[in-house]
Each structure stands twice: as C-alpha cells, then as structure tokens.
Length: 629
Image (cartoon, rainbow, N blue to C red; front, side, top):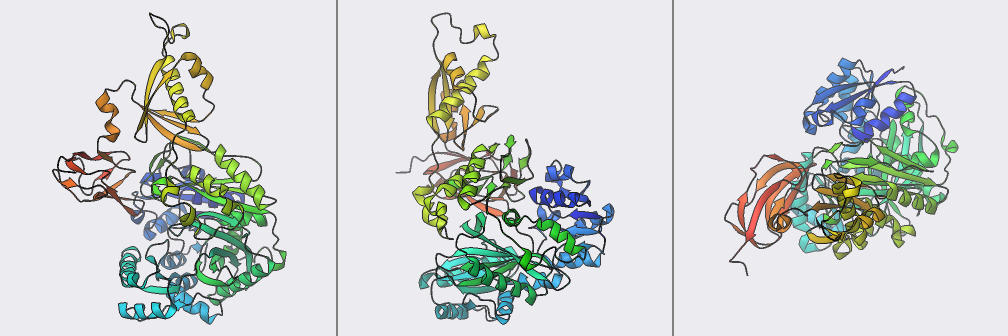
C-alpha cells in the first residue's frame, strides 16, 4: 500500500526523530500538540500541526478520539505512535485500523499478547523461550502468593502483571517483608494500571539487562539486529545503553537472538520490537518482557548496524519485505547512549521543571544528539523530563566512551538542574569503564554519602562574582568603572548557592582576567555558571539587606518543580519534626513528599490543595520551634 501523509502521535524528541526519517523518505508529516507544547520544536518541524487539547496527557496525547480526529482533519493515511504514550495500546492500534488508518506498529493482537506480564510469560514458556522461575497463575490471594514466593526462594521480585516502569515492583529479601511487599505492590498496580494482578519471579542477583532488537514483516520474515546492554539503571529506569553488550560474544548473541526471534514468531509479530532478558553471571539468560514498539535506545543499534530503524518501520507498514536478511546484518564498532534529564540526581533523582534558558548540543565525530529542545523552552510538569539523548559511536568501546564524555562536557544546558554531571561520573567509574556494570551498579556505587551533591568550586564562585561585577560595570563608561573618590578598592560581591554564602572582593583587573569562557546565564538576581560539567545557580545578595540574604535558610519550603498540590499535611501553628512530610506535590505523574528540614513550627501556608504552583514558589514558612530541644 502507498502511504503519503503520516501523523506522529507523540511529542518532543520522539516526534522529531520519526518525522526526520519520514520527511527524508518523501512523506508529509503531521504533528499533534497540547497547550503546553504550542511552541515546541516538533510542532514547527512538521509540515502541519493539529492541536489536541489541554496539557494533561489524559486530555491530549492519551486521548485516542482526539488523535484520530486530528488524523481525519489533516487527511493523514497513517499514524506512527512513537515510543511511550499510546505506542503499546492495543485499543489505539485497533481504533486506527477501524478508522482506515495504517498503524505503524504491530497488530493489536500482538500488543495484547505481550501487554500482560503473566500471560506473556506463559506464552513464552510454551514457545520454549527461557524464563525466570516464578509464579504467574490465577490464584492471586495473599496466602497463595506468599506460599509461591517461599517455593521459588528468596530473594524474589514482586511485579505488577499489567505494567512497567518500576511501579508495582518490589524486591523482597526477607520473609518478614513479603506480605507487606505483596500488598503494597498490588495497591500501586491498581492505582497505576487499573489491575492488581501480580507475578512473582526469582530475583537474579547482580545480573545484566540485555535486550534484543527484533524486526518482522508481513511476508514471514523475522530477524534480529543484535543486542543492547541497558544494565545501568536507577529505580528500574534506564540511564545508559550500549551496543553491543560488553558481556556478549558471538555465541551468546546467536542464542539470545534466536530466542527473541522465537518470541516474536510466537505472537505473529510485525514491525520493530524489543525482547528484554536478564543475563546472569553464569551466562544463563531469562525472558523479562517484550516491548511492542521502537525503544528510546534504538539509536545505538542504528549506529552499529548503519540502518535507519524508523525507515524500516515505514517500509514494513507499506507492505514491503524487510530490507535485509539475517545473514546480511553486520555490526561495526561500539555505541553508547545516555539520557540527559532535567532532574537532580543528587536529591533522589527528583525531576525538575522550568525554562531551559540556553541549549547548545554537542557536535563532533561519531556524536549524535536526538532532542526536541531550543532556547527558552519550558520543561513542564506534565511529561517526562528527558531533554535529549546523547549518543557516541567509535571503532572500540573505549573510543565511544571517551567521545561521549567529551560530548557531555561540551553540552551547554542552563536553566533547570540536569543529570549531566552525574552521567559523566557514571561513564568515568572504573567498573563501567571495564564493561562490568550490572543492574546493581548505581545502587552499589552511587547511594548514601556517595551520592552527596558536589560543592561549587572556587572557580565557580570567582566566575560568578566576576560576571556580576562586569554586568554592573557595563552601566558606566569604561573610564569610570571601579572609580572611587579615594584610593581604588575591591568591590564586595555577596553570593549564595545551596545555602552557602560567600563575599568575594573583586577588582576590575581580576574580573577581566577571569573572563567568561565558561557558559553562564543571568536571570534576575540569579546567575547560572557552568564549569567542569557542574552547573551552579548563584543568587546575588550584594545589595540585599541581611534578613533577605538569609531568606534561603530561614525555613521557607519551596516547590522543587512546577506541579500540583495534592495534599497539605499540616496547619499553621503546628509543631513539626525534621523529615516530617508537610506537602505532597504531584509532577510528571509522580507524587513527591516535601518534608521539613528542621524541627520547627508552621508559621504560614501560602498554597491550597489542588493549586498548580511554579518551580521555587514558597509553599510553607517555618519558624524555629521554642518547644524543640
């Protein structure tokens, strides 16, 4: 069948990535956008764009009828779901077909077959695909799940059958924790996925997460394009992905590839898919799940195979056979990808919102950046906070790793806090450098004191003071800058960063000598300075009265991101203890507990439940509690 116009039912870098290939192949493209995305780059990049509703995903990107209506109004004849949102929703795939639209993805039945972990695992066992020992039966009573967990043997994983992303998932290492883990996982699963069904699996300790890229067409051809290693994760979310896996040789690749192909054949698959496995230290591998879509990390496969997987998707959707046979797939070099997020890795990976004031992606040999970013774009609380994927390819793994570190150091992203500094620490850790990282890597090496936030260096402080001095001096003629009616004296510049205050004495000569080689951005009384991949936000308190200068440490609880106030746990006049939850803020589909930083008394509350608040809004003011010890 001949396609002419493709609507991409997604946003940001995902939509841009799909449209880039579609345009190159001669297709016209249609973007969809919510209120929050009116000015997003993917909207302007498309040949045309259709508004689909308010910012919340349930009223826009997850609203099937609105997306189908946009397709009808635009005259699109095909829909590409991207990855995420509705990409693994069998009802959406079926609705597209009913509306006469080509769904660029697998058949609805294949999506349904892998949509429930319990049913998928039973099907894989029947197909002879190696699976983790566990329980995926119909008896979901607490008593039976406890019995089955003991039969499997601790440690076990308790998992939601209907979902993923770490929600409804618990690792149980002690029998005393088993019942509570089952009940908590069930409650989370019901809330997140509408189903409390659970499965149990033997926990494969210190394993690798290795996945196989598969592809199938309508002519009976099913092949794989090698593996990706996605072991470096935090909270079951991937952080670094690479291809090939440092743990795989030709024999293991062949065996895992054959198992993945068998899995795809067992469900009558079509298009791009990923079969995920746990790879144990002894070389045994076990089926985890199948993602019935293109993956976020597909660029590393593209870079070592030289193939455009979105182009393959469009060819298969048009009825063509796969472009290559299994024997024609060749691999060259090594590729590593990192996910650059607006998040504070040193504060429990807390997602961040706000405006990206300056965005300069890196360039260079072997470097690829997939993003949907531009100067001034706002990271909203409604969607995932990923800014970009930065990918490096090299002839060897070490060449790719070094290139990626250099690329991250060259990246300029000023505004919201990001995980760039943390990513570099991961890439430079000896265990990762040696290719030995497992799924335990981050928890083992980057938790507790090891995850303490890095301090601003002397260079950060000096550069911030120099830049502020120069900004102030620019208001006067050059001959009068730094003039005094007595002997010249250094100018005091008072700065605050992360509750630390310093006063630096700055002269004209020093300010000019320090220069502005490193990226910076001035935003009102704040100046954001980047040095050695660490971005620090300073607040200029030079002309502020002493009380105001201490405002950041006088007990004001501020919103760490844009979001909605879900619950207020205290009232004015209450005495609270350090660590006590005061406010629950919902942002990016996650509820965040905002806690007291000291024993204190609630002086005032400036927000109400249900209110939408901006990043850094003062929520609660606390005063030292005279009754506190």
